[in-house]
Image 1 (spheres, rainbow, N blue to C red):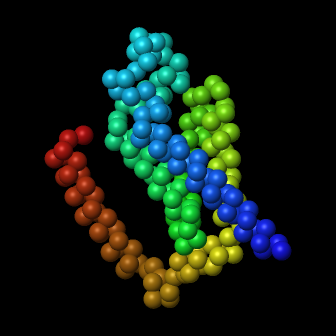
Image 2 (cartoon, helix red, strand yellow; image 1 turned 180 degrees about the vertical axis):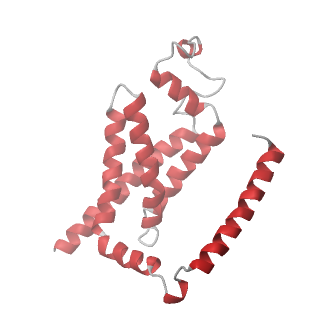
Image 3 (cartoon, one colour; image 1 turned 30 degrees about the horizontal axis):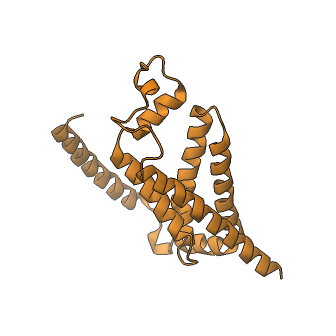
Length: 182
C-alpha cells in the first residue's frame, strides 16, 4: 500500500507542476508576463531608471527581448511536458529546478507581493519531492556515471596534455573574442 501511495503522490506532484508551469510558460510566450518592449504600461513608460521601483525595472528588463522570453517559456513548457512520462521525468526535473530556483530568487528580490514566490516554491519542493521518492534510482545512476575505470585515472602526463589543449582552446577563444569585439 505504501508503494501505491508514493506513486500517487509522485503523480500528483508531476501533474500539478506540469499544469501550472505550462500555464506560466505559455503565458510568457503569449505576452501575459513581463512588460514588452514597445508595449509598456503608461505609468511605467513615464518612469526614469532612477525612479523605477524594483518590480517595474525587473519586469521591463525581462520583457526587453522576445527571444529571451521565448527561450524561458519554451524551457518551462518542455520541462513540464517531460514530467508526464516516467522515462523523461528526471530530464524535466533537471530543466525545471534551476528555472524554479531563479524565479524564487527573482521574486524574493524584486516582488513586494509574495504570492508568486509561494507558487514557485511549492513547485520547487514538489520537484525535489519527486527526486526524493526516486532517490535509490538516482543514487544508482550517479554511481554508474561517476565511476572511473582504472585506465582513466589521472597522472602527470594526462595533466600536461590537458593543460596543453586548454592553452590551445584559450588562444582560439581569445582570437574569436578579438574578431567579434569585446
